[in-house]
Structure formats: C-alpha cells, structure tokens
Length: 448
Image (cartoon, rainbow, N blue to C red; front, side, top):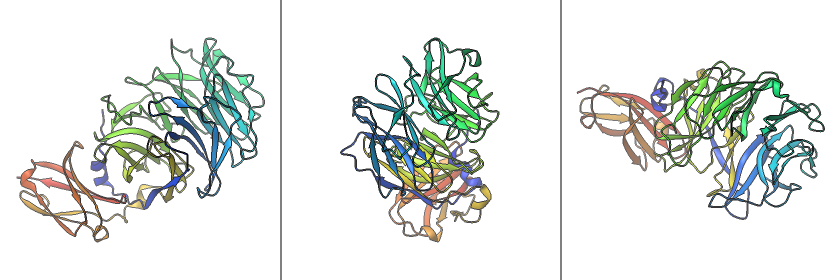
C-alpha cells in the first residue's frame, strides 16, 4: 500500500491558494436542514437539494427546491408537489431554469421544472413502479439516465432522449446481474462525458462508456459500507467510504485510485488525523479535486484540501469549517460547499481561484526556514513576514504523518525557538497554519 501523507507531500511542493469558503445563510427556521445535493450551472446559479433530519437521524417532512441566480445574495424556495415525508436523493440541473429532483415519498418521483421552479412535472409516473431511483444524470438537455435499485430481478436503469417525457429501460442482458441484497446508493454515481459509474452496497462499481446502454462491473478491494466514486476523466478516479464523524473503521483515511476507468484500484491513505468526507472534481483542471475531511487536530471540524494533479500534491484550502463535506464545482473559480445541518443549516460559497496546474504555485508560497538545519540542539524557526501578527498553530509531524508537537500561537513572530533535543533522529515536517487558512511548511532534519 502506498501512503501519501499530506505534509510530506507539501514539502516537495508548496501550493499557495488564495481562496476561501464564505458562509451564506439560507435562513431556515432552525437546525436540521442539510444541503446535501448541489448542482452549479453557471458562475452565479446553483440548485440545492435539502433534507430535514432530526437530531436522532430521522427524516422529517420538507419538500422545497432551493436556488440562487445571483451568487447567493438571494435564495428562492420552491415547493415540490409532494407533501409528507419527502426524501430527496439527487438533484440534476441543466440550466438556471431546468432541474430534476429525484425524491422518494412512498414511491419514486422525478420532479422536473423548466421555468425556474414555478411549476413541476413528475417525469417518473411510468417508471420505477415498485422500485426505487437513486440518481438522475443529464448527458445533455434531452439525454439522460435515471438509475435505481434492482427491480424484477435486475437493475432498473431508465434512459431518456427527450428530457424524461419517455423512457427506455436498459435490458437485463446489457448489465451484470445484482448480488443478493445488493442495492444502489443515493447520488451514488459519477459521470464524465459518455462514461458513467455507479456503486453498490456490496462494494461493486458498475461502468458504462456509452451513456448507460451497456455495463460492466468490478469489485472494489476491501470492505465497504457506503462506497463513493469520483472521476476526473474517463480513466482516472477515486473510490472511498466516507466516515466523517466517528472513526469506527480502521480505513477512515484510506482511498483507492484507478487510472484505467475502474478495472483496477490501488489503495492509498491520507494522514491519520483525517477522516474522509468527500472528493469532488474541479472541471477544467486536469487532475483537479477538492477533498473534505474531518480533522481530529482541528476540533473535529472540516478541513478542505486541494490537489491540482490527481493527488500527487495537496494543499490546505481552509480549516475549521462546519460542513458535511458535500461540494460541487463548476470550474476552478466557482463552487459551493454544504453546511452541517445539525449545527449550521447553511451553505458556503467559494471565492478565489484554484491553481489549474502545479507550475502556477511554485513562485508564490512563502516558506518557513529552520536554522541550523539539520539540528541537534536549539534551533530557530523563521516565519515569513506575510504571517507576522497572525493567529494560528505550529505543527510538527514525523515522516509517517504522525503529529509529534503542536503549539498555538496568538500572534506569530518572525522567530520561534525549537529544541531538537526533544526529538529523536529523523525527518520532520513543520507546518504553520493561520486562522484564515493560510499555511507554510518546511522540512526539518534532527540529527544528534
């Protein structure tokens, strides 16, 4: 197993990301409103799927589509024509006026609006009868696919060429049979171009390269609870099992990479203080992904990481965010991050510009310096002038990614004292993280 530890990678490449997520209140009447599903359609517009969940985890009645068309300055709430215990499973939008909401309320409905939410039509009156839909993906304004659980002995996958007015079910001969008690997952899919993947409760990944007409399947390695996948092109992708709040599994920081469309997977890991929440593709960045993690070193709040090159390098975008980790990006300048409905029924808007390649970042990032380096006794940590007077923390990690030292600084100064005598011989990573999410790193060698 190849392990990638965040800070050791940052030593090789220092990425300066001048960006942050800005809190956008949605003014719900209380907590429990989870902005699970997001689909941005332009730089100012995003459709949001919200589920209302009690503190005990039970779904409560709520049936509104949520949208902004002015970058979050104003939000509109449009009632879906369903009452009672409505659970939203997916949201797909093709423009500011057209969106699909996949819901379950004792039976599946796919509500579609073509006038910005003023009126809705159920496009699933003749499909998923006695079944269950998990997602809808629009390949274009007219062409799409709705994916569901097995129904009558095989997976129910319904394709449309007219925006849901009519459907054609994928024949059972075109898709491998499901296992006993195997089901799909809400929004448990990813699509790029003509390729689409969906994952199952048995840890299997189905793949189609022709918009869902024909399918193959591969077993993901390891043991899975709720597998997720995210692809950045037709070949490169990542699979993970989100476990954001309770580290009940030894694999909470593991993920798997594929470079052949899902035929084979290689296990890798983030640092041990990270529990993975979500991966999200950054369209327009070859290798760009955003990763949200629960960080045990930051009050068990969300830390957002960014890679411009398919997890070869990583940078911290922001720390200590109250979020469920779900996010959706239109490009490297436009994106949204969900709040955590138990504490923060809101949404975050991305502001800034993510680097589109590694070379953009090399000249910008100010570095920490240790003198002398290597050290055997006292040493001085020099902080870049740009960080002077800011609050934050200094962390020292060993080469495995384990934190060996942490110090809170109320106002960083140009020089901080280190004592190498308190560390065993080895290579360490020193990181300064300020409260506004800026960071700097360096490598420190201790040799007695």
